[in-house]
Length: 102
Image (tube, rainbow, N blue to C red):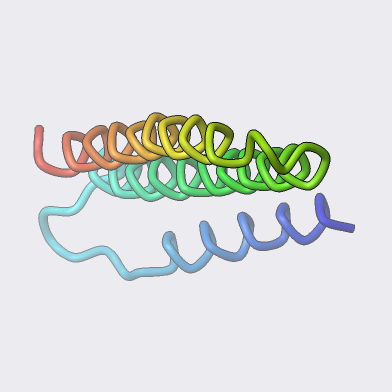
């Protein structure tokens, strides 16, 4: 069910992106750059969001099993979340490069 919903949303989003009427100066290359930039940041946000959810879930499960190490687990979790967040920032940088470098 989730896979079907994801596929339908991707098809709908690309259909809306490609439905814009072409004006003078726009080309297929430029349109694909915009589509690539949107997909780059969108998929990166999806992946990092899932990764952060797994990290927080694992930390909470570990703290529930052994409450004495919850402080240390929380510290490691925050360091891991910082690394995961840098991946999203790198994807944003790639998307910006795709948009502005021609």
